[in-house]
Length: 214
Ligand SMILES: N[C@@H](CCC(=O)N[C@@H](CS)C(=O)NCC(=O)O)C(=O)O
Image (tube, rainbow, N blue to C red):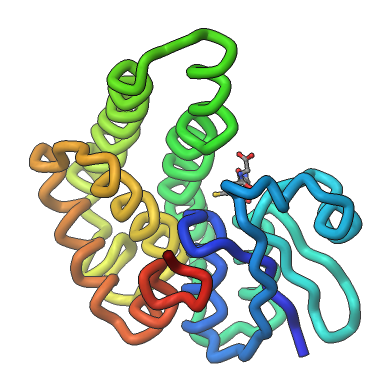
């Protein structure tokens, strides 16, 4: 059996829960609490020395870390349904959209960055929230503009098949909503996210449906 190390509110874990559900791959969840700092305890560091969620241990014992690398691994090992298209231009486009979220937005707004702003730089909660909203709007401005300009979207980010960009998008939109960000300037982006989050795999992966949710 494979094991996914996950925390319900971790958006990168959410990406992997969606990916596994879309591929129909069963897993045992091993819950690692970020607020309790369990991701920095020896038991978890023995699995992922980076001390970051998620981590996936496959039945052959191999450990996978870094969500985009994990999603692409799953796509190569279990090709149907595809997360990245076979066409190389479309594949680069899907990777680009995915990285807009995974590299331009998430790293600036993850837990350790927000905590550092308040602990080291003494930012008040409102200022931390403003920081968060600023990078959400920067990221989604670029995401929306890319969708608008290239017009490769259909029901989802790339045509009508759900894929890696949607897997990254839905957790980021959910997080932005949790921080009360105004997303009204990104109608294409939010419409795609709202369509995707209604799919059974996305519902099964949603934070509120996880056993460790509180
Ligand atoms: N680039 C990594 C980011 C992993 C990451 O930052 N995960 C968060 C949870 S969403 C985490 O473990 N945070 C712990 C912390 O910030 O201390 C990925 O895509 O997997």
